Length: 106
Image (cartoon, rainbow, N blue to C red; front, side, top):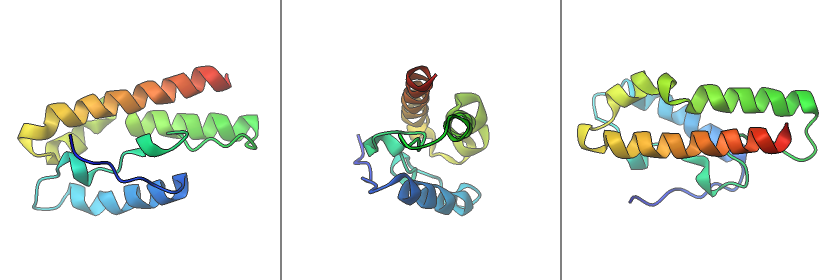
């Protein structure tokens, strides 16, 4: 399994995610290691203890939209064929963490 980048903050992860966008439509297929995974962070949704209830709800919704497997069609089309199952497995792991965070903060 490829090594994940360890992000110092959710902001760093979010910046890495933004830099992924141009690669999705690039000529070179994506590899699992090209995708920034938030799994090294305390929270995969970016929720902070100091966030208001409305901010937590907004961040959880944004994370569910980003990580829901059904939303990954365009990205999966760009992923190298032999890594697609690994990427989808990782997406589902992150989605489960988002759902766990949602339960915890509900």
